[in-house]
Image 1: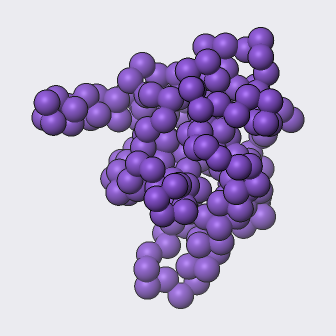
Image 2: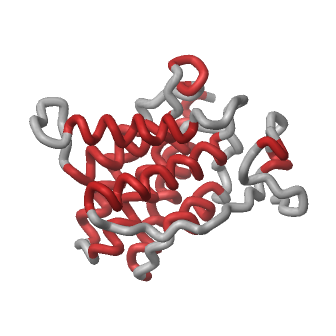
Image 3: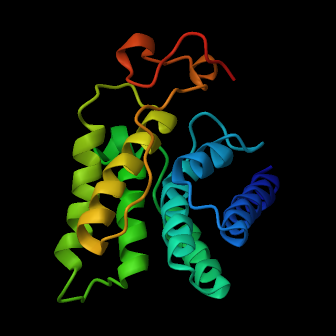
Length: 200
């Protein structure tokens, strides 16, 4: 059974990466549309550690598309995001007090800016990117919601990316969540993205 789960996860990872590469090839720099396309992907549950690397993959794809980077650069970036994101355990938000979507913002920053543990410049800013995302996520009480926290992480990351790199990611004024009927723990009207009529 464990072997089957590994194969399944690898196939989902491949599909996630291919969607990102498709956006890049088409020149689509729409982070929030990409995020929802990835969360809509068959095999991506309501809550799962996939979200921990979906967030940096969305950000890397969007920024690399806007920069018109070489395809191979993005491909390598996405592989690194998956590799690092898989180290962020499920339940990190509740068991460690650090939501994986927020850590995903730091994963993006470290890959994009080339930050490593021994970096003298940029190390603090990389950690602050994670901290800012976590603060944004912490404005809303639990229980966990991987969809809500991914939206919040993207909004925070957009501010960081504009401030640090001068790249302005388009953000919608409002996001309407279509996942709440799949979430037995949904906060419903206590969530900023809840709208009763939108279902998936």
